[in-house]
Image (tube, rainbow, N blue to C red; front, side):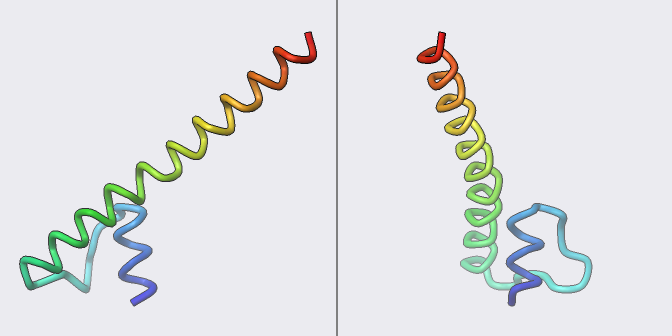
Length: 58
């Protein structure tokens, strides 16, 4: 299950294991979306904090 979840989060795709049930497919799609949004949001937050920190030092 960890392999399947990792393949879903990174959106690398499935070569050997696929979700068959429609609900499982929907959950995999949600996991793939969150797998892309979480790092993007985290990176944006870190950049914002760094910029705010540099502005205070000036």
